[in-house]
Image (cartoon, rainbow, N blue to C red; front, side):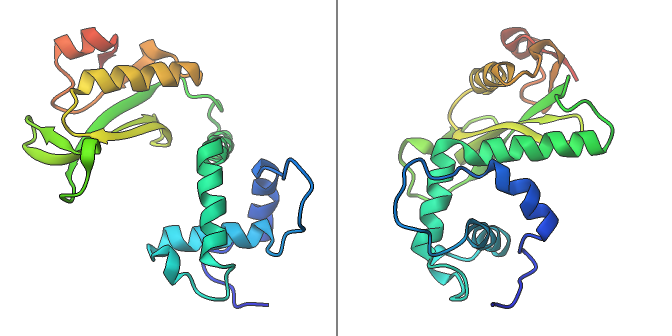
Length: 196
């Protein structure tokens, strides 16, 4: 038994999260480490910001933890878990589980010289790096996000983000656009949104 960290899941938290974690599809070797310990290790890394290789030794090996983190990212487990937690929180604050409105905004940040096509220049903000578009509900809970080159125009990616959100049951006409670069009449007309 190891010492508990502040990032460890409580019994109640684990009982809610556990049904959303995928089970193995085929029989194989029995697990050496529990999924709860894997999640505790992932939450430790996310909260502490440490490198994978610096994961304390009382957690499962970092390669095992990273394997699960990557697998769940690729198969959409994190998105499904996030959506379930968001819906549960909305119900707890007496809101409809599915948001009827949202706000989208972008942020450009400088990045390192290594980058390839994920790095570009945002002429409006005079930043060379990456851009993040974020769609949130009226409570500030994330609905969709996208990180890409800062060189792309806002309306192109906002439109794509909204199309993804519409497939995720957020009604597009009730989504507002924030930020000084994307609130112009032409931009709103191109993406089909109203003013905030």
